[in-house]
Amino acid sequence: MKEIITTSGAPAPIGPYNQAVKFGDFLFVSGQIALDAGSGELMNSSIQEEATKVMSNLEAVLEAAGYSVRDILKTSIFLSDMDLFNDVNAIYASYFESDFPARETVAVKGLPKGVNVEISVIAAKQ
Image 1 (cartoon, helix red, strand yellow):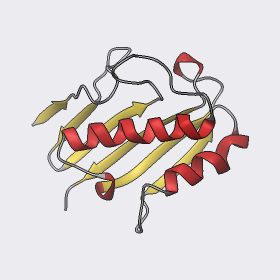
Image 2: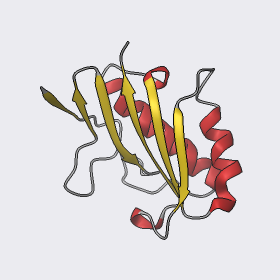
Image 3: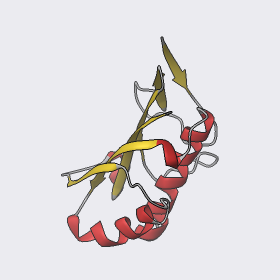
């Protein structure tokens, strides 16, 4: 059975989607951008701040469902420019200890609200 996951610890959806959907042991987390859940403000004074906020939003959704970054199987990273890859990758890597998830990173023409990075994840319990 499908279960909708929501939390006030991450930004509310800005369209017709949910923060996450749990199906069995799998959790599908929608793409997160650097919006502050409380104020609705973009946290993008630097790419490091932006990537950190994206990761903390992902953590909030994961935790609301009873998961953690250790449960992530796959990530999809969308960048406004591949020149940002090294900076985003450094922040991203700091959230994992080992056994990194599968991943793709692509540059796209545009992202919501003009942000530079959006990340979505698929997680599962073992």
